[in-house]
Image (cartoon, rainbow, N blue to C red):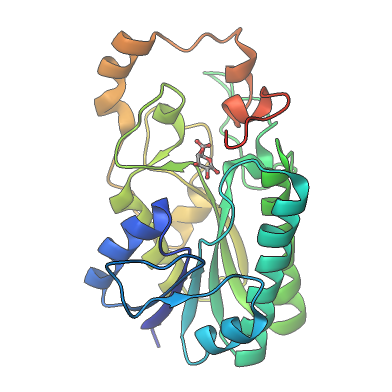
Length: 269
Ligand code: 15L
């Protein structure tokens, strides 16, 4: 049966806020969780990913989890370790213990951020490209993908790991013309990931059908995802304002863009 009750972690965050607005139209009943209270959502659970008891209770009885919680940019290693690595482990343990069958894990393009950008006439980057994290943040997403694989192989907990590009209302940089995931397409991708059959552990890139796309959306489409948006409608304006991307600029050389060149990374980037 299609999942109905879904725990949304990180519900106060950027993507969480967008999905809180869009997912109910697909028929999902959302249970919200975040480390900080959400003023407009009095029923939201306020709990940190370190609180194992609270997580057990939060996942009890849900059909699926959309796990967006965690630090979403580069941060000191100890913070990434506590929140993204240990926190994601706690969430998976809670899911396993309570028999939750499927998780959508918000991975990131920064798990493969040091992969050179494809040449204009070259093939798109496949999901099978080796992990090449560009930050401790990206490294935590590599961990999350491997954790998901482990929980499928050992415990039969299914995951779709979505390497999100950048999910915002509109692209605001030239790089985002390649990596943008519109909010509407993000909701379509979440719905596909929750309803597709037998996903086991599937890794997908999360982007709209951008003309300047860098990576291969075929595994996402294989779940039934049909993106409707293309960042190209914003290209002329952005390029007029910011200029064409300079291929010689190291910040443009890799998928992760500025995450690859900030030494030390800015906190937050
Ligand atoms: C990410 O993983 C970040 O969470 C998001 O804020 C963006 O910076 C995005 O990557 C990106 O690559 O633009």
